[in-house]
Length: 173
Image 1 (tube, one colour):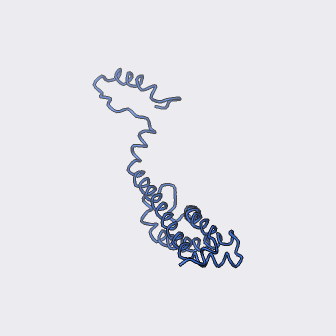
Image 2 (cartoon, rainbow, N blue to C red; image 1 turned 135 degrees about the vertical axis):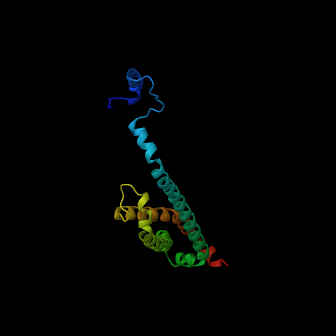
Image 3 (cartoon, helix red, strand yellow; image 1 turned 60 degrees about the horizontal axis):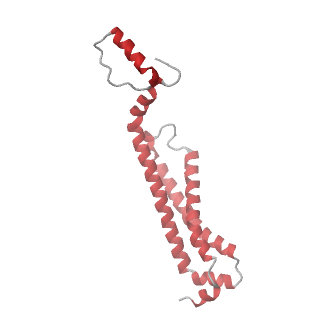
């Protein structure tokens, strides 16, 4: 039966009509088509939801890892950064230097990740609804999102590198 408005509003009248035809019919579970579809698709949606949550967790861990690697690199190269600044490097040049290093690591990771994703895309195809296993737009958006998150994670240590005092850095170690 199709109705306009809220379909739950006509449930009692439908039950009354069914009882008028046959009083022995047991009406236990009444739900809308939308609710029925959500219930029927839950087993397919659950793995996709879990994969999405794991992807976000992976993105978070990758950004924390890149932050740590960048902070370590800035700490190890404090003397070099100080020398660059003493020789006239501007703060934005130092920022670009550190971010470029992080970008190289990130692009290498993205390329390895794309290769692994392309290799395993057929395995994941049963969990994908409305998306092709090798959809170029999805791969591009995910790669771009990874690059943006990685550069944001690297920005804090890179910003810290711009504040290195050349005199202190030259006396470092």
